[in-house]
Image (cartoon, rainbow, N blue to C red; front, side, top):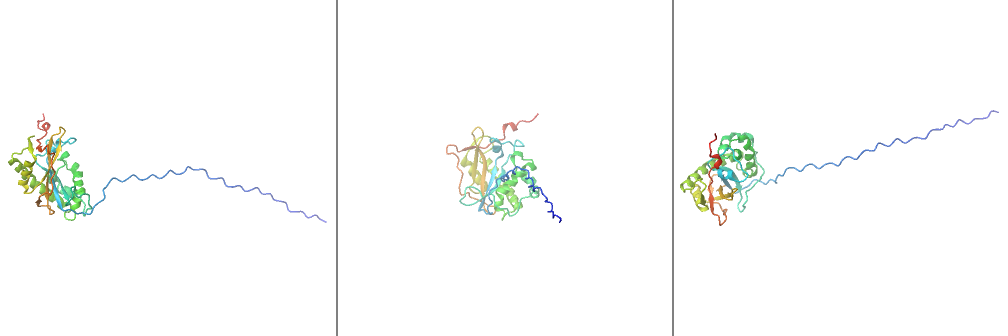
Length: 260
């Protein structure tokens, strides 16, 4: 009788687990994006009247930290800005939503008049370096009347006002014996001459030079919402009660010498 053999036993090796994945460093934490540049929240356009700010270049160029090119600067009142105001507010209406944007083409169209009547006194004859100045005037102030006066109209109205009342004020100051000769003149006497030129009560703004002398820096004329008609300013800046005399600055002495 044959012996029945059992099938051979097959021995299998134990299954090996796959090797663990190599350890990786955790990803770096995400960086927060840099904060955006500060931009004030935009208001809706709206205003009640304007301030036409006319600046005396000689005084501006004497203020600490200011340099003017060319020197001497223009010898007539130039425009600082046409600023939208609201009744019962001391500060102007600022940074409003634009109904239409200011463009380089618009500024270029008015280039010669802007340089003549509304210059950036740091570089009064350089159109390119003055662009930011005019853009900022529009964004900060002009935007608040952009429903009524789009950029072209705003520039046109501002230049018309400045080129009209600047010379009239100079004539009345001269008629009153007030000249840019480093002499001090009474605050009220200057205001009376400005009233003769505009027919309305205005404001003055003064600044101290490096020696502490009080200079006539700007004249502020209040203008109706039509951007044409002067009106009485409802309130007035007042100087220090012990210093009511302002110097009407002459050209800087260094600019009067003839170069060799």
